[in-house]
Length: 60
Image (cartoon, rainbow, N blue to C red; front, side):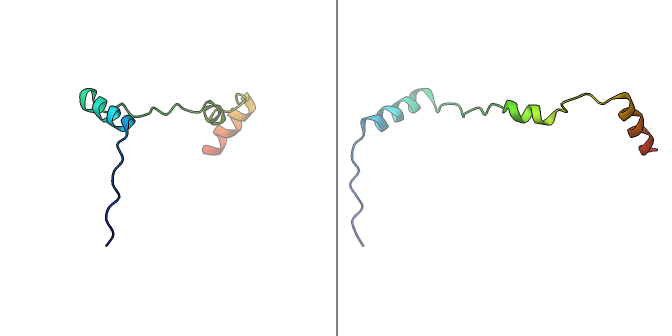
């Protein structure tokens, strides 16, 4: 079995660990909704009166 590798001191990791200990962990990243997907969900044109009348007749 080989010896574990010796840990090298990192200033950045030490500063971050100190900040986490004092302030706490940073909040998780917020994902913003994609505007292109939002537009794709909406129909491009309003349905015409003929489309509305035809669609209501099929349900009955």
